[in-house]
Length: 51
Image 1 (cartoon, one colour):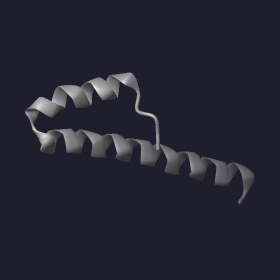
Image 2 (cartoon, one colour; image 1 turned 120 degrees about the vertical axis):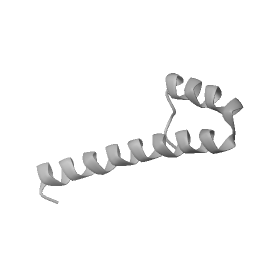
Image 3 (cartoon, one colour; image 1 turned 60 degrees about the vertical axis):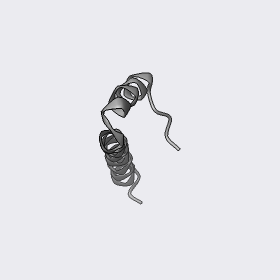
C-alpha cells in the first residue's frame, strides 16, 4: 500500500466530520492520482528500456 503523505492525511481527517461519502471520495481521488502516477512512470520506463 502506498504511503499517504501527511497533508493528504490531514485532508482526510478534515473530511471525516463532513461525512463518510466525502472521506471516501478524497481517498479515491488520492488513489487515482497515485495510480495515474504509476501508470505514467511505467509507460516512461517501457519507452526508455524498450520493453
